[in-house]
Amino acid sequence: MKKVAIFGVGLIGGSIALCLKGQPDLIVCGYSNREASAKKYVERGVVDYATTSVEEAAKDADFIFLCVPVGLMEQYIQQLCELPLKEGCIITDVGSTKASVMQAGQAFKSTSAIFIGGHPMAGSERSGVEAASSRLLENAFYVLTADQDTPQHALDELEQLLSYTRAHLVKVDAKSHDTIVGAISHLPHLIAVGLVNQVRTYNESNGLYELLAAGGFRDITRIASGDPALWRDILLDNKAVLLELLKDWQQQMDQFCIMLEQNDGDAIVDAFSHAGQFRSRLPERRKGILHSVFDCFVDVPDHPGIVGSIATVLGDANINISNIQIIESREQIPGVLRLSFRSQEQLDDAIRLLVGKGFHVEV
Ligand SMILES: NC(=O)C1=CN([C@@H]2O[C@H](COP(=O)(O)OP(=O)(O)OC[C@H]3O[C@@H](n4cnc5c(N)ncnc54)[C@H](O)[C@@H]3O)[C@@H](O)[C@H]2O)C=CC1
Ligand SMILES: O=C(O)C(=O)Cc1ccc(O)cc1
Image 1 (cartoon, rainbow, N blue to C red):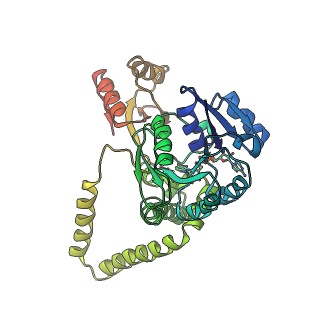
Image 2: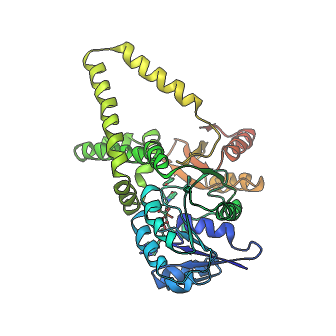
Image 3: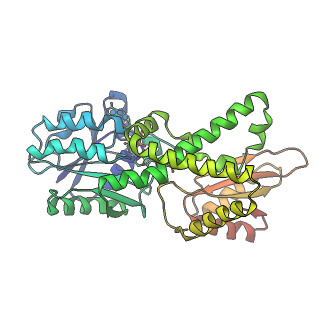
């Protein structure tokens, strides 16, 4: 038997645990600093057993996954360094930033344990073990940050274990990781929060902003709903990269100011054309770091049981609805049902089926 200890069984730790638990010759132990959480991990069947003792979780572990917020990684690394870990124990993390944790992981160099950084590049704005899913990392990229001293056998062993997540493993150095992920994930989160807060301020004097911002505005700012403390840790940890990125962002915005002040329509057209061309090159059906929304809108007549019958039609075809929302159903006006799915394939199948049943469906 190989023992895997997971520190922090939340969205990511829980999703990894669900991929590993029940696999042949693996036993999964969850660690939490809170008794109630440790109990919950077991009750939900996410781990084989759980403990609030760092020593007990780490004892005899072949693999240790640190799945706590970025700001706590160094503290746990230091604690683990002082414990008598199993010879050759592989320690990895799932933090959204990699340079600082790789630096902290140097501490294992004087021990027989091996530290390899990691970042599963998928997730959501939700958090906690309740949101964990064995499918979360499937087909997503999963970055591993090793260095020149990392023994090949340790990398092979970790890659073999991670194959249960069905993620695509890629090796990237920590500095490049933080620069790239800063641009495609951290900066967009900052911008989304800034945009929402700008509109929130306007809304204080005119509630129409809130009313009219439904739909697209809500979708493009989904990531502003991420866990505040989690994002505080990520942004502060990647501060140097983000300050550079924000300078470039400000320059982009300054250029728009100039285009508008100078009525430079050609420059606006160029900016949209260049963005559109680059965007069309981005893989469309590939799972990316920010999860895509696979939603459709179904017009539904306002009569009892209609929601249930739509759910049954999809359920009978084995199509899983990940979220369902009734939007505004008033007398005389048909209601609209927003249905969310986990993949483009499920969305396509659902649309085909519902249109076939005579429903009007829009995406
Ligand atoms: N949210 C996302 O979509 C992604 C997050 N990550 C990274 O994964 C890590 C975990 O994030 P999530 O799973 O989203 O967060 P989460 O909030 O769902 O899980 C964090 C877990 O850490 C535990 N925890 C909090 N304080 C603790 C402490 N002092 N000692 C021990 N455990 C403690 C919590 O109880 C929880 O189980 C973070 O480092 C984050 O940057 C990586 C990829 C995606
Ligand atoms: O889709 C979203 O909401 C995310 O923001 C997911 C996410 C969050 C943090 C990561 O390090 C990687 C992915």
